[in-house]
Image (cartoon, rainbow, N blue to C red; front, side, top):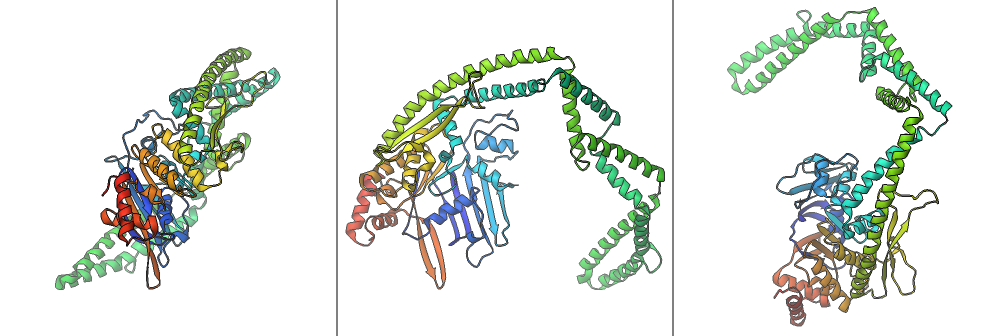
Length: 579
């Protein structure tokens, strides 16, 4: 849940601090007041694009920060590097970010130089990291980037959550991963016996040659550094000797001069205490420089040219370069590439030393796993299809109440490409899953992403979010342009749905319609002001009579007449319980 937001020099906003409550919050204001700027600032904070044009005119930096409450959620302590986090707490755990008092602070800035930065608490993060983490916190629906239901890859996740098979699918993914690994090993056997024997002979020789070299980690870099020192012995000695003489040579060297300055400074400081701090800094500099001089002198005395050692280093480097040239893409690759080749080669040798007996055993094991994969994939697919039919009916019913009675929602579940010999599966089963929509009677079902109207899209999202509220861990939902092209009873229905959804979520909605706004638990007004040649957007909560006046303005454009004010009061009393 978003608890507060601080915006500084972002677009038309000079400086604003807002605290937010649970439940349903509407954002209202006259056209052009800057309602979308507030959403833009939040989108920026959540990992949206950072552009210099977002900085307020005349300023050098824009910044946005926000505090989020993170509810207690289960965290898998044995999560692997390749496992996708399932919620915000698991993401933080995976990235070694500790959470205090169930809250995290997100911060982001953009400067006029184009430089930007982001943090989660005190940990700097990339824009990609920020966007990934914030996707567990907020969904923004409308003409913005945070539209998880617009991503086809997310449709499978929502359907599985609705079907209650998330854990079952996760277990399937592990089994499928094992099958892929086994098949990869088996493919290494899928060559003629002559080819296998030849490769085995070559890699056996390579393994022995690399083992005999007794290489150490980063040895090439260490040897290259040593060779550079030995090859440039005369130049290094000359430079160090010059430094040593300048620092600690005769009576005119730096330390000798500094000793005299130090003596005079001490005398002056005894007389004038205001010079004490300067004298102390001089003392500190003298001791630091003395220490540097001693280390340079010691280094010079340790310098010994050893031509035999230089030859040893060059011979060793030549051996390493030859091995890289022989077994890697280039002599310039890091030594780790050679080690990786060694490990892969050693594994091949170990697995192929016993010939076809190992291949036959592996083939039997693969067939057993394939059978289990297909059984589980079929079971998962049946559960998906069963819940898909139920989901279609529920969404159509809600859309009818939201003024889209002619709209049909569908869930497309098709099998992945297969042939007569092999059933094709992926990491999540045998199904391709996508949400479809037909916005008008008689129109064909099209992918959800094909919906053109922002208002239609937002209402579809509202319907889905109402259904998925229990399965989705995202706490904060923001709806923009949800009132496009609607009014009357439809707007009342939209407001009622918002209110219902806000029982378990924090809901924000930008709206022009009073019939939606009156359902809100909280209302925030955005208004534009002009001072001289400076235009600003001001953001503040409205309560009591100020809210009555704002609802009256939304109803009739007039917040001054008693008739419009009384109408506003009656609506607030009826739909939100406010007087």
